[in-house]
Structure formats: structure tokens, C-alpha cells
Image (cartoon, rainbow, N blue to C red):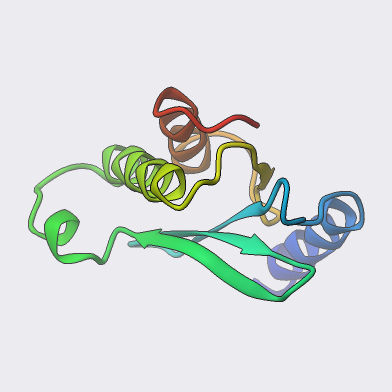
Length: 117
């Protein structure tokens, strides 16, 4: 377990060297646990979370779907909230996770709803 965690931390630091959230293009940060997925749009210059969504919200917790399907729904909700807040262009931070499965489903759903990254 320790090796897997430190490997993800190394990948995460390598990504974060290149990707930072600015007011023009904030950063989407994704976190996935075994059961849930969380995403937030962050302005790193101010250190503020602008928009957030997760699979633990009431409307999603009641839905009987697979984890990948819930991740796609989280991506759609996040994109809608971002567009309402006036955020159109973002940078995607996969947070050290591989870009497939739930992380990919979230990203593609956010793109389909109108976010550009």
C-alpha cells in the first residue's frame, strides 16, 4: 500500500509542477476513494474553491448506478455549476490517478456539458 501511495504522490507532484489554476483558467482537481468521487474547481492564486461536486450529494446518492456512471454525473453537475459561475475554460488535474475509468468518465462528461480543457 505504501508503494502505491508514494507512487501516486510522485505523479501528483509532477503534474502540479505544470498545472496551476489561474482566474482565467482554474484547475479541476479530482479525488476518488474506493466508493465515491469528488471534483472541485480551484483558483490557485487566491487559494479558493470556486465550484465543487461529489457523488455524495443527495440527488446522486439516491441513484442506483455504477461508480463510473456516478462519476460521469458528477462531471456533468460540476460543468453546469461552473458555467453558471462564469467559468468556461479550465485545466484538468487528474491528481496522480491514471486517466481511465472514473476519472476519464468525469472529464469527458464535463467536456460534453461545455467546459473547455
